[in-house]
Length: 91
Image 1 (cartoon, one colour):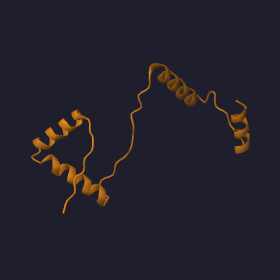
Image 2 (cartoon, helix red, strand yellow; image 1 turned 90 degrees about the horizontal axis):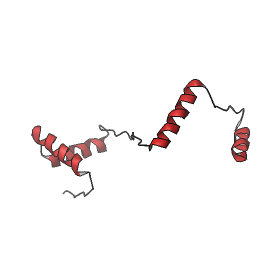
Image 3 (cartoon, helix red, strand yellow; image 1 turned 120 degrees about the vertical axis):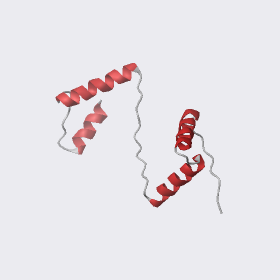
């Protein structure tokens, strides 16, 4: 017995995946079945790593903050959690 799964996917990704499956001589449905089975069996792992896409202003702020961290600038050191909490409540 089998069940049907319906999900949404970007048409460009679907097209590329179907083309690759065809080149390799594998039905696309078989690719999805094998991937699902491997994931269920623990032989396929998925890492969630996102590619952040910032607008120009946010990107500049993030880059500046990363430069400061690398250079050890604009960093506060707190001796304990209470001092940190007090500081955060004061700003």
